[in-house]
Image (cartoon, rainbow, N blue to C red; front, side):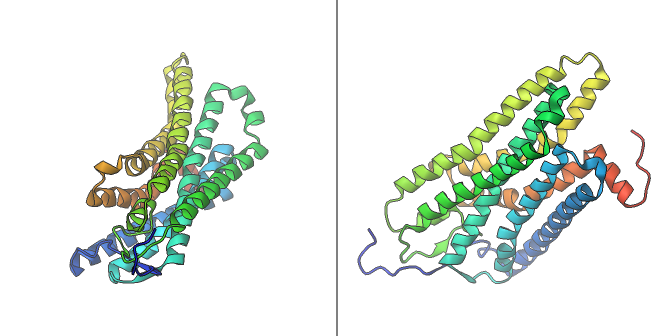
Length: 313
């Protein structure tokens, strides 16, 4: 129960980067704005190229385009507010606005986790069961996978937001973060949050450990199949089709696991904030960078779009 004579909170303030001087905040603003614009433009290019180039009208690139759209929505939910806070550190956010930000952040973050599973399954079928690939990974199966990922994201986000914002917030209103996230909000609640922390942990297991396990199993089967390929050139080509996805998977799940699966006793505000910056600002940029620099088909499509002949391998 809330303490007697406590005042109900109707808006929050982000601690964010307010401890830094104005000059440092300006440097961060320019850096994060540059990365944000690169992320938006990179994902827009990826989606446009996949839509325009018929060579990329395959399940693998359909999932990639959905991941790019989801990453864009994910960054839009967080970074504009963060940039505003860098310029003006003491801007309040209404409790309803905080709930909306948390909802969209969780929805698209969880959606990304399960889209990466769908992409891993696509690579598994392509390498381990190539003769049935077109049957298994048909258009309907791809649409169902994407819809399922988004549905899980919406469902889990609804559970998390409802569990957090049913709590009373009184007196304390400064969030020790640069956006509305579950753990910093639970610290501000003026009641026991044990049940909410259990819900947060269970959701984290469901959206991180389960997808990671499925991707891990997929790659164990993929690698065992690749190693059976007799020609070195065939093995190299098979590994190349998985390299971009595997790189994004390691970075995405690695950062998310450090943030959400680390024991509460080992949390430090500064360390959590640094990892969160990496996860929310830098990781979304890696998707277009990795897939454009390491993927020959995407590079070829970019060359064709610019009217240049793709280089021979």
